[in-house]
Image 1 (cartoon, rainbow, N blue to C red):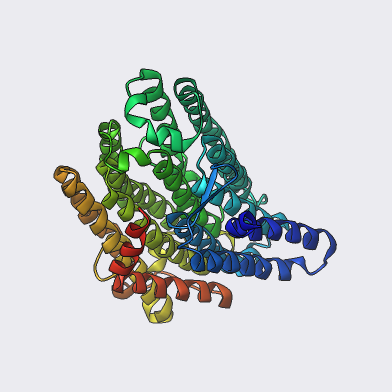
Image 2 (image 1 turned 60 degrees about the vertical axis):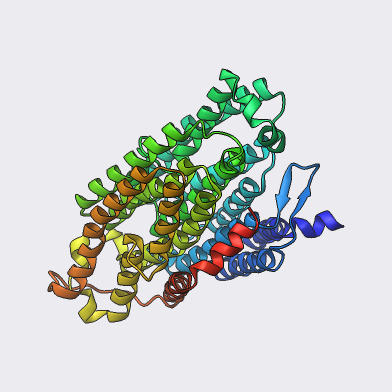
Length: 471
């Protein structure tokens, strides 16, 4: 019975998937009912995770754990997915692209993310990764009437399958050298295992597979095309939930490195990936005319900032990454949310120029988008600033001051393309008439995101204290 309560957040989502399937099969009102069922499931699961955050337990013979920072990841996934569901209600109507499986796939992908975050065995990570990835491939092309969506789904599937090959081969080599897939065993014996070149190769291949999932350079090739071709709400989910799940799997597997009990053998790889991702993402984003592509390159840069925390290999880095992911989820979902509201039918209003003069006609949307842009740029007092601050501090603590300096330089570059949108909205005259359809549910999701970004910016210390208390 105790196990039942320990894994209740997953059971709620799992039961929700079965209920949603039955509703889709037998109810004619599934289009109206399913989004709200999804939101209730996600909120119920997220709130339960929040209330049981202090009870850290292991289940399934030590293969799965709940409580502590695992529950913080559950909260990121479920609350983020609830916002995506809210945004999707009107967005799917706009494109006449409602397919019953949309919300079922959304719930299934969240279940996969939760499996990855709580995994204590490499096979559980792989199980979660595949469940999430397969749902993502289908979600990318869910609007099958769009050619770009079909292209996005195929690119994501082919490159994703290629990256999964690295992960599986890595797991095989780890198992071959450690004789087990238990993460606890690997963590306890990490220093002895690192003397084996097969183990190091396996961990490196595992890391390369997940570098693809977090969209780090040079494994980012899929990101701009997939974000641009997918539905805007789906792209928001890829860039937040998918990234957070991949980071949770890396943090769990490499925990021995972050506890400072062993030398960080992977520091050179992680440092190089961090530098290349930050600079590439920030510089290439400047040249973009399409706002979804700009957010895609910005997502690569943010993966770089978070990888600084991995390279630091200390508790400050882990806490910084988890806080960053929490902040990034809401500021990025908010930004994609506003893009989905402004986006016209047939993919109009997606160029950055179409945002000119937005403040004069839709002042509320312009103000909220400005807050998200300031936060993504890392301007205080918003959540994005503190996310970067904690990650840079962890690099300085680990004597990687040069890495923090590169991060600051990249942030300064990124200010240009984030603030360019704010300048366009407030100081430029519109080139053409911009008609925005009223979307009440989408607006609610964006308002919630704004409030969370401000709250996380006001009280970052409290959140960091909660995270570090479980490390």
